[in-house]
Amino acid sequence: MAEDDKPAVKAKIPNAKNIRSPEFTPHGISAGRGSGLNRPSALTAAQARKRRIATIAGIVVAVLVIAGGVAYLVTRPGPKIEVSGKFGTESKVKIPTKLAPNKSLKTRTLIKGTGPAIADGDTMFVQYSFYQWAKQTDADDSKKKSTSKKIGSSYEQQAQGSSGGPQALTVGKSGVKGLDKGLLGKTAGSRVLVEVPPSMGFGDQGSQLGLGKNDSVVFVVDVQAVVKKNAGPQGTPQKLDDKNLPKVEDQGAGKAPKVTVPKVDAPDKLQSKTLVQGTGPALAKGDDAVVNYQGQIWKGGKVFDSSWKNGQPALFPIGTGATVPGFDKGLTGAKVGSRVLLVLPPSEGYGKNGNSQAGIKGTDTLVFVVDILAKVQK
Image 1 (cartoon, one colour):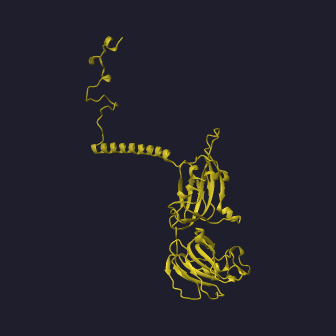
Image 2: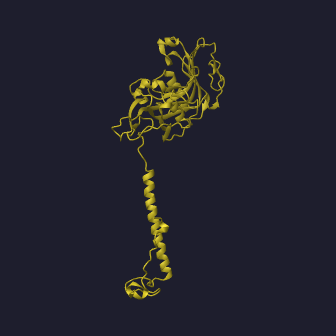
Image 3: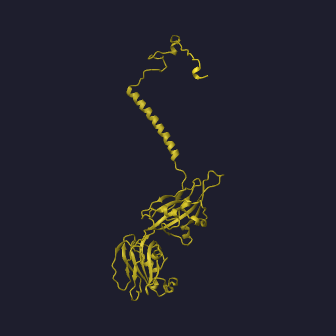
């Protein structure tokens, strides 16, 4: 049956005369002692208004507390990679198993340095450690999202006496796209965490390191020095008119100077002459200097080594006996930004045995021009 076809129901409304007093109260009259209905308030209008405001304020505070609690639950920090340790020393890295690798490149500056910023084509001198970071595929362990393990460290290589210590990397040519991109804009003196996805990692060479094709890599990098592309001496030129010493002519940014050796007998004592006086900090014993240099033999002028020709600045320890004596003595105290001419008799160079691999005899005097570009931050 349709709703419209149903018979109407007659409501039985009580007659007011049959309702006793406790059940019915005419409008505006108290319902009796203790009912509280329509009882006149003992508060003044101002007091009532204050009470209403206090009540509303209490409700607002309660709402904010609840909302704040919800916001915390939504935005509270989740697991993240933890890195500890001092700059210039190997860091301790903890990658939580509950944290899955990202599909995109991510960087985080852990310590911010005040040196020059890294740009494409610059050369960085860095210390680093890096880790394999793989997505967990074991369905039986739903709480574990990833696994990780250490792959290598420049600090460990240094401790083992191999080619460790600060490593020279040219931005854009490091071989790891994510590392090149992730360090752009970072400054010398910084420690940077770089999370590199598989698409920006080692590529086909990753298998040699034990990496799977879908593995991410985590780098912790200490940027100890930055040398700008085509960097040269920065300072005030110093006049040198000694006809018994080589003449040095600048050939422009990024190019080795032209050195003309005079046709006279070589000096029998170490010569150290500042051609450009830099304005940076002075080199001291124990420092690592980043330099461009050219070395040649006094007799005949043959160039036997050149960082300009090699296409990358070199790093030399100062004052520790790790290089030829004339370098230690001639560069100690020289300032960053300087260009220095060094003339090394055999006793200040390779000694009586010379260096046959470089074509240097035990009687050869050596001529070096050295541009001091930076000092490694430790």
